[in-house]
Length: 240
Image (cartoon, rainbow, N blue to C red; front, side):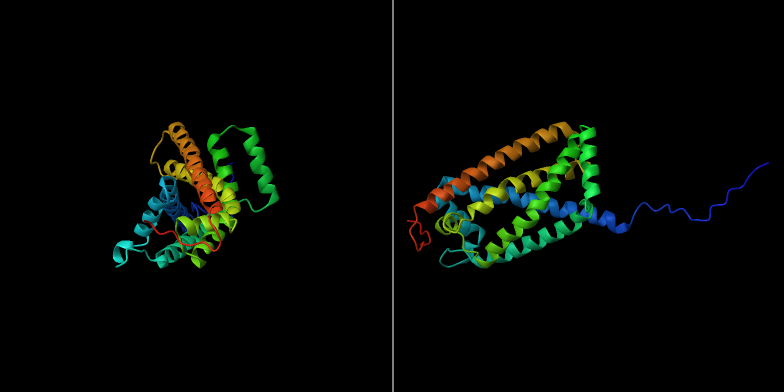
């Protein structure tokens, strides 16, 4: 005799909400934008290592000094761009939070999972998670500072770092943002099939992390030395 089993509950064949795929693409797109900006930003900032005048000219170029009759840039450019970057950070954080462990049990399960397997990408994702949590608090502080006081220059930036004690923020911000961004770019490249050579890409990401940490630390130390030599009130740098 053949028995018939009736299924009263309809089984869904949906692969997930369409918003999930859109959120993944949005997270990757904003992550690439923010990671690319970080690479450019740190190299622009490091021009201070070439001297005050080199950094001054870089700032004037980025602030549109070529459109000014005096050759001096427009600080409003820094303000507007900082607002735009803050919006990008908010969007990126909003779509990323959906994957953040929200309960203690989820954290325990994650730690147990990491302890039971030696999967490098899982460990990389964990550190990106931790640094992302730190950046959630630090990045808005940095961007709000630039929005409220967009004046940039060898002396004015050094004043912010040394006399206003912004170095305390940057000491925490630098390693967190570098590690988060480089791991993020690595994971995007793997996620979207840009490369299948994970081992080589991981090594490249580690080299980039070390390089950017050294570059950022050297720049920060330079600002501290310059700031320590400035008297109060600080006068903006004027090239000879």
